[in-house]
Image (cartoon, helix red, strand yellow):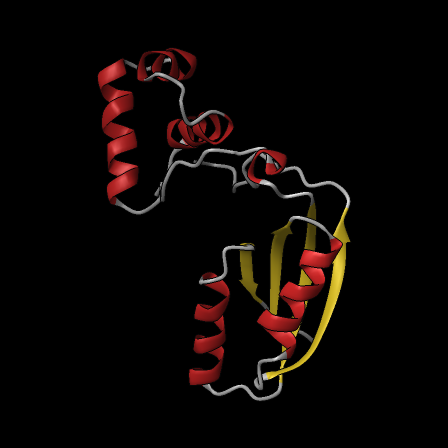
Amino acid sequence: MLDRIDYALLRLLRKNARLPNKDLAEKVGIAPSTALERVRRMREAKILLGYHAEIAPEAMGVGLQAMISVRLARHSRALVDGFHQHLLGLPEVLACYHVAGADDFLAHVGVRDSEHLRNFTLTAFTEREEVAHIETRLIFEFQRNVELPARETGA
């Protein structure tokens, strides 16, 4: 169970994963050795899953982002798992979500331009027999929320 110190550490790391341990400990009001041990424990417990670099899409040649909703024709475990793996293998897919509702997957994609998006959707989605329907929404702006979700009080 996470306590308020753990949440404070996670909140700071979520905002800046490169924060030095000394600064992390100082901001939370604990000894550097305690901060180091708590972060290590949260990594081992698979609470902290990794550290990521936020990269400017333009620097990678991404001029257009979209969210593509995908509805599968059938829902066997093999088809769902296979399509999920297919999405994860596409370099244009920035993130994918297996969801409940009318659609089965949401794929956040980054492409060079509208022609790249058109060719990508035709090849990666519409030519696949397990795909029944796709819908593409252009993303005008994307910003990651660095705040943690609200937690129960009392800890």
